[in-house]
Image 1 (cartoon, each protein chain N blue to C red):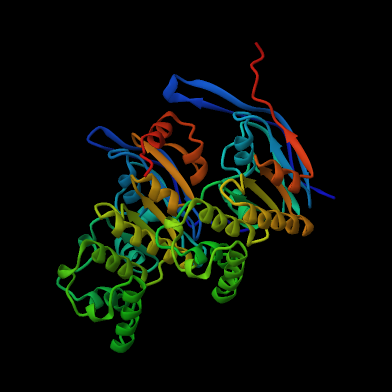
Image 2 (image 1 turned 60 degrees about the vertical axis):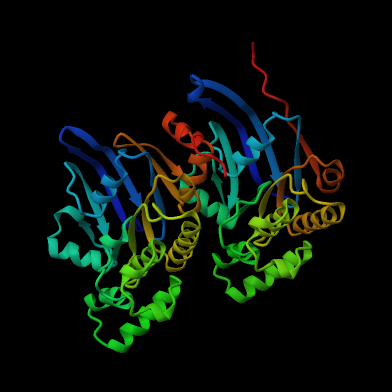
Length: 258
Length: 232
């Protein structure tokens, strides 16, 4: 049987000014699988996401990515242009702040279409119809296609970022607190969208969140981080319902039941 | 009939690190065999570990020692040591679970909550919804509620949505945690008939059921559990 692993981190370590941000971290992700990385602020979640996505070089360890042809690539040994191309095609990144990803002075439709153009699509009519389709999928009205993102609400911006990210049908998406800072009602809608789109398109996701309920709703597997280490990992419902590590027990018992 | 679920020397305890590492043993030396078409009801006082056993059988709680063999796609899989992806595959194909309470997903309608399992098996949306609709109607959830997310439903309605979700896929093994706790007599009767039909199809069922009438109606065998006794 061929090894299906899509992304694999081994022995990842990283320090900032003497502070350990990551230590001895191993991560594997399969196609179509959603892995949630949870832990409090400063536990190393975002550092891990940045290292896995090639945005930050680790001090130790290696990150492997298997491309559609089955070839393994050492993410941190890739030439910068190749990595950039990967980020624009096979991969996607959803930031907590959509402004980091969107171009605020380009129309909503342009923001979605731009990713397609970067992949070589040139036909204006095709680009516009795909953009319209994606705006509909993230529940943005068609008559907003020519509006600039700066007139959008926070929830709409986040949905636009998701459309922009998914339009190229990436196989792997990194998400950093995608629902952070949004109202609960807006959050619910976004969670439902992410859940259905990811399942339908069979996208693999590494999701960083401090919200355990979000992890439970979306993720197949979960990794709990504390002080740069993964202290517990497994099936999401197992880890949350039968936590073993003292820190996971603290995390789970600290959540209020609504 | 063939044994399709079998535990040997299954043990489970909880270590409460926030309580100074207090160890609470709950299950010890559980040997349970369930055959195709058989319904075993777990019985015992509160705190005897019935729910812990049921959750362990589903892989929701991690067994501490012993084995949980499940017949999955023609082979026996030990859930006690299986990796997460294997457990998910076993749940997808083989092992269904009806919890006491529905975990509601925001914005998803009752109909789609029930149809979802079928969709993940590649059944097309229309047929999946048709089957979900008829099962909901059978459980007396009126059509006007099907398009509404069940968050606002009554306890009994949510439980029936949960039952529909659990029964629709026809898993070869079903784990039922108090399936009739919030139901009236009429709906209890419907659930009893659904369990009987599942058994006739060869489904192996493990249930927790405090209602004596329901228990007598569905149980082929009672598995008696006693609260864990310290050796001392």
